[in-house]
Image (cartoon, rainbow over all chains, first blue to last red; front, side, top):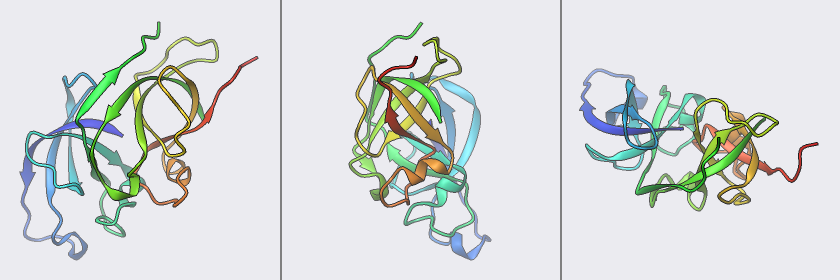
Length: 92
Length: 87
């Protein structure tokens, strides 16, 4: 799983039938401090996240393991909206 | 299976229902000597066995979904064991 910020929506009218009714969001990867990294992902929205949300993304075959994405040809899904991240330990 | 230390907690109220009640931690991968390697990652704790500061073993990729009782959860990494001692 990675952290990401939702920065836009993707609209598509011609798509695979099993993707009908699924919202696609453009997400920019960030680190746990919220600083942007260089990669972008298009993910299916399973938790009604909005633009600007700080979210948790899941990848690969695991992305198909939600009610909203079961048996659909997708490889990234938003699984949670993050409220807060606490770092409690420092490792050398 | 890999070795790591729990260094932080991720709080999220709105989650997909498959991972409800499951805590999410930030884990720093470490070597057998306890030195850090690679960058930290987000790991689910389906059996609720870990706490902050614990040394844990986690699994990644599709094996991570098997750590859930349902075997059906959208996670890429799961904590499966607590480490007492490495000798």
